Length: 112
Length: 112
DNA sequence: CAGCACTTCTACGGCTTGTAGAAAGTTGCT
DNA sequence: AGCAACTTTCTACAAGCCGTAGAAGTGCTG
Image (cartoon, rainbow over all chains, first blue to last red):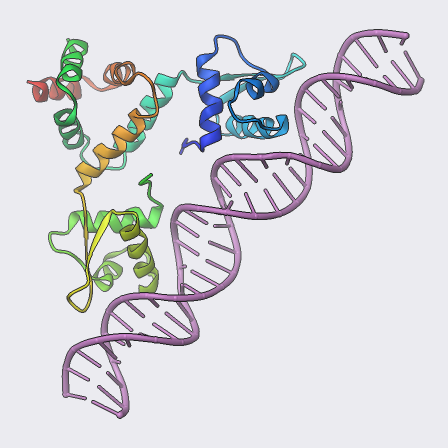
């Protein structure tokens, strides 16, 4: 249920790539598109409501940070997809059959 | 881009689980909800437009079949999710770290 | 050709997303 | 205190997707 629109994803990407929490203005400046700050604020508020962003309301330009890392979030998405089928393993088997040899090697390494 | 609504998913599930292609009426009957046939036809047409369903127009009740198996489709979804990040392997590493031991074993087996 | 079964067309209401102006709130300066 | 600049909230709208289905069209069968 945490699927993202295009702009939402761009904003999340900035937050994921930033060490520090960002203000709406900073997000706005760093976006490629030239958008009104209110647009960015709306998106940030929606992301907050979705539970993907945490907002520090103490400081005056509020600062926003991603709740989960990009990897964590993406793993959640993978599990969501896998949750739509009755047989996860069947899907994983097929998935593994579809990856490149080098990626398969990486997976073997990870699995120890 | 092949994300599905709730009803769309129910219909796809029927098609995936059926050996034979199904007519709109058959789909309609097999659905839990009690919907008008036209509703089902609309959904089938939309699924066809999305490229998920193939329609045989030759026979008179048209017959509908899934283009890809459920596993194939789900693998596509996984790849779509993985395509949103710059580092697939980082996500896969974390994913593997999150699965059960028995599933990890299955993955090792599959990877040979 | 008449009637039935099936399909297409059209439509509407609700929800999500991108977009932003108008209005309200906050803070710091004088 | 009062103003100016900055920031946030509220409200809104258009487009697109999805569930839903009636009305109208098409084609087979007796």
